[in-house]
Amino acid sequence: MISRREWLAGMVSAAMTRAQEQTPPKITADVNVVNVLVTVRDRKGELIRNLNKEDFTVEEDGRPVELKYFSRESDLPLTLGLLVDTSGSMNRYIDQERLASHKFFDQVLREDKDQAFLIHFDYEVELLRDLTSSKKLLHQALEELAPAAPPRLQRRDAGDPGRPRMHGGTLLFDGVLLACDELMRKQQGRKALIVFSDGEDTGSRSSLADAIAAAQRADTLVYTVLYSSGDIGRAGFGGRGMGRRGRYPMADRNSGKKVMERLARETGGGFFEVKNKPLDEIYRQIEDELRSEYSLGYTPPNLGPGFRAINVKVSDKSYVVQARNGYYAAK
Image 1 (spheres, rainbow, N blue to C red):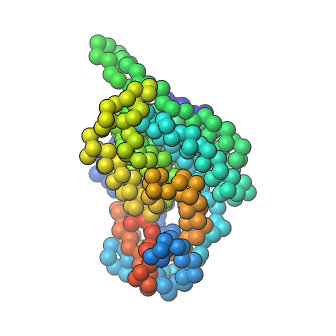
Image 2: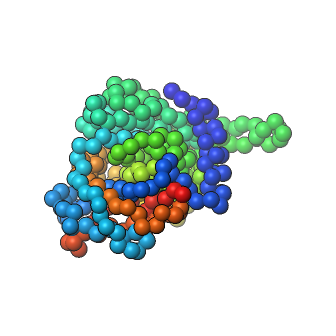
């Protein structure tokens, strides 16, 4: 088990330094072919699996591009990451997440092809299990999921010994950014994160935009699973109640849903609410999508660095297309 002190120290600072620089974001290699994974559903939400290359059109920065590669992807190796919010507001859901995740790994992970990792985040980010194809090791890591300890007072630093600070927060954005920059970015093929949270971030050094950009640079789909904001406040740090409306104002609680929706939408993943659908059913839908993707490839018309917006359409206008909305080109 790798502690945050060993794994997180310096990484967020380095990532923020890169974000603050005026140079465009980089990816690990020059972009000669842009690959876009696409999921298509009809109006009833059923997956469409029989489309052909001619059914798709793709635009980059508003200009049509020629599709040179097309395939239906159902058997490519999959790299999967689970990010679990273990902060005080999520304590009541950890057992449910653990049980469903055990089933998900058993059903989805093919030990001869796929690999996965597990991260939890609260006032720290901790890698419980690095990338592995072993279901046994992943199951063991899931058993290590535990509610966050109550926040504690710590000295600020040696130069300011008289001013203690509270060690607390929910590092959602830092967790996503580091999972993508330090793990996903080095992998090839299909990649997806599943994030369990109420969408509230308190304490991250990176922003939502930084987290989304990291996922786009790593070509990683992000599936977000939102737990009802109506339950926030019934159990705070250490189990203390936080009043009828909870710790956060209503506007802030609603923003958690917007955060989770945007994180999924801009990376090409999916957004789910547990209050509307059982967790087992959410996992089944994610599995179906990951096994029913189309892979589209084209040569980018603009080889300069920077962000490129992508818009994917299908010939049947009634279908709903799910794909990332852009990528970061290298120099």
